[in-house]
Every structure is written in structure tokens, then in C-alpha cells.
Image (cartoon, rainbow, N blue to C red; front, side):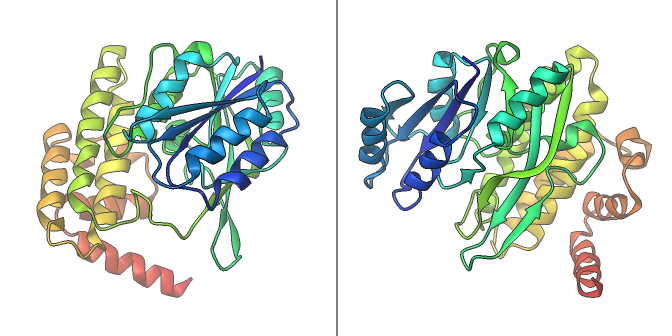
Amino acid sequence: MKLSIIVPVYNVERYLEACVDSLLAQTIGDFEIFLVDDGSKDSSGEIAERYAAEYPETVRCMHLENGGQGRARNQALPLAKGDFVGFVDSDDWIDPEMYQKLYDRAQETGADVVYCDFLEHYTDGREAILPAAFQEHPLSLAGSSCNKIFRRSLIGDLRFPEGLWYEDFYFSAVMLVRSQHTEYVPEPLYVYRRGQESTMHNNNAAKNLDILTIMDMLEEELIPLGRRGDFEFFLINHVILDSVSRLAVQESAEKKAVIAALRSYAHEKIPRLTRCESFRAESLKRRIIMFLNYHGMEELAQRILRAKAKIK
């Protein structure tokens, strides 16, 4: 079998049919779909069962008590038979040729991981292309697992962290480090539905501390491989830059304490930011924001970003 597609499902009765229909329309042909109902309280589970009954050779439905997206994906991973594995969020959908194009590129090049761009779809109908990465660094793709296919043999016993934010980031980061060859299809084939509140776009400041647990897990994975530079790359980009910047614009009363904890962790792991090779390799714009966030001047960093946005 060419491909296994794993879809965690939770309270998405409004969107699930569009998602699954886009999967069934895939031109790749030889694939299986796992719909993992994560304890939905609406009719999502019934919708998933209906698809499994209608397409028994292709769709498999699983029901779990609510345990989060990572756990739902993990339940299906050991059952996947495809040479490659893809993940789709149940409120999104994909281009009919997405998996054919990614798989063909893998076959042509021997790649372990192949990725594409996103198409953001807003509730008012607007759409915008979202590039998969804004940097040339090969590990800058860590983040979503949904715009990628992963060679199943390379996944091995790797699983998504359960009960934590940033589980997608961890899985993608480890897979990109493991990959001997990663390829890019420069087309917006994965349609990301904007408008719902996601874990990365809300005011639950304290949950951002999960990134520190994830970073500890990455350190344990990477340091024995001699990949400290990769660990530091993830740290400056996902803790110093992304997490601190995201918290800086929140209204939560906890945000200052959380930012302080993130900064303290960064200082412990990278005592002198300007001596960090990964930092020095960043663009000037990114270095400025990282430097300010690292030194407790995230509000100034945000003013600079807002001013640049106005100029654009």
C-alpha cells in the first residue's frame, strides 16, 4: 500500500464531510484512511462510522475516550500499512492531487519526507498562500505534520507526545532530523481552515510552557546524535522567537511569568546568545527580534514588528 492517512476527529460535525470527501477524492488510489474519533460530543463519531460503512475497503473508524490529538494519532500509527503516512486535521481539506504529487516526488528522489505549501482559507472566503517555511534552513519546516508525508519505516517507534501542546512540532522535528533526504513540492495543496481558535492562537498562556517539556525531549533525542546545533536552532526559533512573541501580544495575566520562565530556560541552554552559531546564521531581522526577546525587551520587539507591518 502506498499511503496511510490518519485523521484525529473531535467535535467537527460541520467540517468532517468536506475533509473526508477530499481524502476519498485523492488520485493516488492505493491508500487507507483512519478516522480516529477522540471522544466527540457531537455527531462526528456517527459521521465517521457512516464513511467506514460506505467505504469499508478504504476507511477505518476508531473510537476513543477524549485524550487529545497526539493520542488519537498514536492509536492509528501502529496499524498503518502504507509505505508513507500522512496526517490531516479534520476541519481542513486537501487538493485532490496532493498525495499523488508528494508520493511521486518521493518515488522519483528517494526522499523520506516530502512537503508542500498551505492555502489558508478564511471564514469570509478569502484565501492566501502560506509558504511551508520562511527560511532556507532544512529544519525550519518543523511545525505542522499535515503538509507532509513521512516514510513509515523511518517513523519506527516515534510517537506524538500526549497531553501536550506542540506535539506536532516534536514529531516533525524528529522526523526531519532523521530524514536522509527531504523534498519540496512548491504548491499550496493543503487547505488550512482559519477562523477557529487553535492551540497556537489563544490566551491560555500557561500551556505555552509545554514547549519546555518538548525541548527537553528534543534535547534527549538530539544531543546523543551530536546534533546540539539543531537543538539550538529549534530553541531560538520556537522558544525565543515564536513562543515569546506570541505571548507578548496576549492579554493573559500569566503571560509575564510564563515569558520569564521561557527566557530563563533559554538563558540556561544558551548563556551567550551572540555566540550561538544558529543565531548568527539567522537574518538580521530575525536576529533583532530574537535578541530583544532573549533580553526581556519583547514589548519593544512587538513595536518594531507593528511598525514594519504598517510600512508594508
